[in-house]
Length: 513
Ligand code: ADP
Image (cartoon, rainbow, N blue to C red; front, side, top):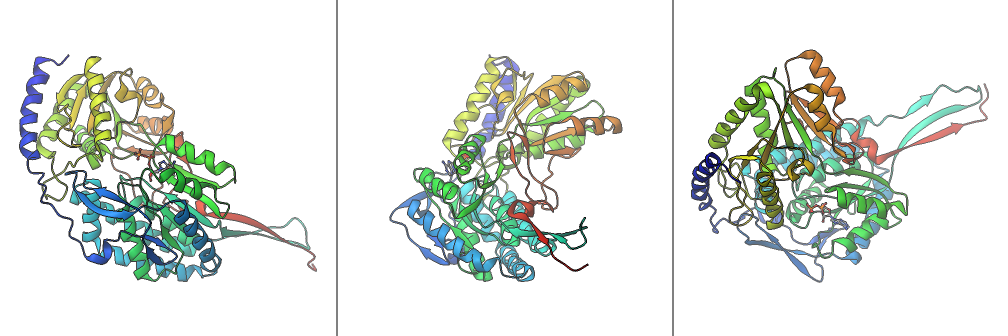
């Protein structure tokens, strides 16, 4: 049941939000330079229509933005064949040649950053400031891997025999299938494709059905940059065609590698399909990030960190903090300060409006899931301090829940929405135990000024990435990846390119000592 105080607070907040919500007008239009607004598939350097199309919708208004070619298994196979043929010559390019082409592609992204950001905002709902941030992040992978392309060194191994030389060569694995989600429609592509192309692989990209326009705009710029035909291919398709297209991309013998970012359930399905032909696989799957605030924390910094880590992209990132654990000594004060920050900083609306910080969720299904988690938490005794409702369309009020416990849905599964569930704890051991009591482990965050505690907790958290006194940690120089069922492999950093290389041992015998 809602407490009287929670109801009162909720009502005040709701009035404010519905006033803001009326500003989501249906008149917003996606106006970007024509060549960037591609709607056909891009296979072997050609733009071509499929037999059918599927609509791409603006999640803020439900309006149709474009009709995009709905590729099927035939187009997917053509793309794989083209990528395989292109691989034979792409792998022969020098590292410097590949590097220069990636750099040109990066430069074009920067040149067109405003239009690319608008496309992200319209098809995913993300506020413009965040879309511009995504383009900066996304392009940085092309820049980073244009540099890393030239640093793929092998080894000369000291031989135990005088008549032999032993070498370890690094070679590209071949054609890579790239399957990406809607929450970072641009960056999830470049983080993979930058590394793949730098290594000498060619790619077939299947973007998420909600956000194919960003992928096609990237292909347009790849073409303008001069990437040879067949090196980058994009096969957009509807949800309906996804299984048959996915089947080709994960089972065709000419594909050597799959790289996927998305839900854990889909990742497991793709891994099973890839097993028959023993493909290499990289998987960036779901998270359930703990965000721990210890008594010794700089509370201002912790509140800033929580706001950024929770409400970025309306809570729709796999590294969003999902369970906020706060130690007893600072518990009430943290709640009070976060509540004030939410009132002051969060503004719902269409992402193209400059004042918006919170766009819609990607679709109604996503919003309903979040609303269910809120209702479940409240029914089990959580205090609703802010928000709590699903609004028109797929908007959900930013929500603050206190006194959350580990039996509630929001602490048992990923939320992917603007809900901050806060749990109270007393000891460090208790916090670490709660944090690790999950079968996934992507990101984790904690705030402390106790140096010994920082080392203990950083080592104890069962995650692939840790933010210490920091709520946002993604960067091309740093790595991205998880442990447990959050995935396989690493993206970004100097390790990201290894996912697209194998190491060949060459034993050179019969030499005269
Ligand atoms: P969500 O449910 O949030 O859309 P998914 O993990 O299902 O998350 O989607 C991530 C990506 O995986 C999208 O590009 C989606 O189209 C794709 N996908 C989903 N199911 C399959 C499948 N059977 N084969 C290939 N790709 C798939």
